Amino acid sequence: MFSDDDPRLSRLLEGIVRLASGDLSSRIEVSPARDDLDAIIMGTNLLAEDLQIIYEELEQRVQVRTQMLHEAHLKMQAMAMQDPLTRLANRSALLEALRSAIDAEAPDDEAPVLLLMDLDGFKTINDSLGHSAGDQVLVTVGERIRRAVRTSDVVARLGGDEFAIVMPAASPDQADIVAHRILAEVGEPIEVPGRSIRCGASIGLSIGGSGQSPEDMLMEADVAMYASKAEGQNRLHRFEPGLLLVRRLRSQLVEDLRGAIRNSGLELAYQPVVELATGRIEGVEALVRWHHPERGIIMPDEFIPVAEEAGLISELGLWVLHAAVHQLRDWQAESVVDSRFSVRINISATDLQSLQFIEDVREVLKETGVLPSQVVLELTEAAIVRGNELDRYSLGGLRGLGVGLEIDDFGTGYSSISYLRRLPVDRVKVDRSLLVGLGDDPTQPALVAAVLQLVRACGLEAVWEGVETAEQAGMLRELGCLSAQGYYFSRPVPPEQVPEVLASLAERASQ
Image 1: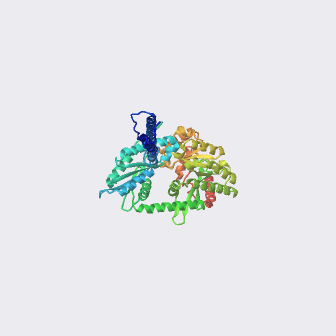
Image 2: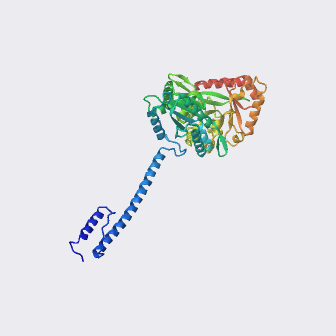
Image 3: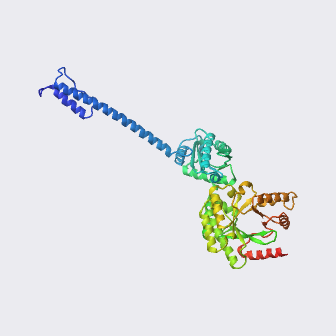
C-alpha cells in the first residue's frame, strides 16, 4: 500500500484532472519503484493513449465528413447556377454575371453587352420530331454558341429555346462580330436521328449604360430580339429606345385582341366555294376580320401572328368555330341554304395539339343541329404535313365526328405526296400561286393538270383558290377541276350579304 503523503498520488490526481479537462496528450510520470501506485499510473497513461487515438480518429472522421458536406454544398451551389440539360449557366448565373460586369470598370470604348437569342421555328422541331430530338438540338446549339464566343463571355440558357450571352466588356463592333459568328454556327445543319435539320435564330443586343440594372438590359435585349424576329430569320437587332414604343403598342394590341375575342368584337366575312361543272354554290369559307375601334379594319395577317405569340390562337379559333356554325344554322333556318351547303373554317396547328378541340367541335354540332358533313375544317399544309402522332390522333378523332378535313395552301413547298395519301383528309385547297399565269402562260394548263393528277393519285379532290377571271374558271372546268373560289365569283362579304351573293351566283350558273 502507499501513504497519503506520497508525491506520486498528487501527480496522479493532477494527471486525471488534466485528462478530464480534455488534455489527452498529458502523461503522468512513473517512478522507478514500479509498485501498485505506479501500476495505477501506467494504467491511467494507457487509458489516455487509447482515448487520444479514439479522439484523433473521430476528429479525422469529422474532418472528412465536413469536407464532404462542404463539397456537396459547393456542388449544389453550382447546380443551382447551371442549366441541367445543356450544362450552361442558368438565369440566376446570367444575372449575377451581368451584375458583376456592370459593376466592373471597363475601358472607355467598351461596355457590358448582353445578347439574347431565340431559335426560329423550334416548336415545329419539338412537334414533328419529338422532345428528345428537340433536347438534342438545344444541347448542340449550346455547344456551338460556346465555340463562337470569347473565353471571357458567359453563355446561359434561360429556358425553352432561349439563350443569352454576357460579354463583360466589348465594343459595339466586337459584339456584332460575336453575334454574327453565333448566327453562322447555329445556322449550320444539325444531325438528329434519321435526319438533318437547320435551325435559324434571332438575336437582340443590349449595351449597358450608366445606372442600368441587369433586369433593364435583359428587357432591352428581349425587345430587340422580338424586333429581330419581325425582320425575318437569322437576324441581329440592336436595342433602340423607339422599340419600347413598338413593344407597348404590340402589348396594347394583344390586350385589345383579347377583349375583342371575349366580347365578340370580331366579325366574319364569307367567300363562296363554287362547283365548276354546275355553278352550284357548295358553301363558303369563313374569314375572320377585326374592326378595331381606333385602328379600323385589321386584317388577319397582322393579328393572327399576334394571337399565336400571345397564346390566344385557340380562343380565337373557338370563337370562329362557334360564330361560323351558328351562322350556318341561322341561314338554314331562314331557308337561305340547304343541308348540302357547307362552311369552311380555318383551324390552327395549336388546335390539333388539344384533345379538347374535338370536344368543342362535337359540342357546337350538338347545340346547333348542323350536320357534321356541313362543317369543313381547313388546316395549313405546314401544320398537317409536319404534325406528330397527337396531330394524327386529333385528325382521326375529327374524322370520326364526320366533319370534312381540307388542307389549305397546298403547293407552297411542304408536301410529301406519299404522306398525304395516309392522312384522313378529303380535299386540298391549291394555293393561288399555282394559278398565276393561267390564261396568259401557255405552259400553265399543263402544270395545273399535273397538280390535279397528283392530288387525285392520293385519292383526294382539289379546290382551286384565287380564280380571278372567267377565262381561268373556264380553263379549270375544261381540265376537270372540281371546285374553285376567288374574286371572279365573289369577294368575302359580311353574313347579311351572303343571300344576295348566292342568288347572283345561282342566276349566273343558270344562264
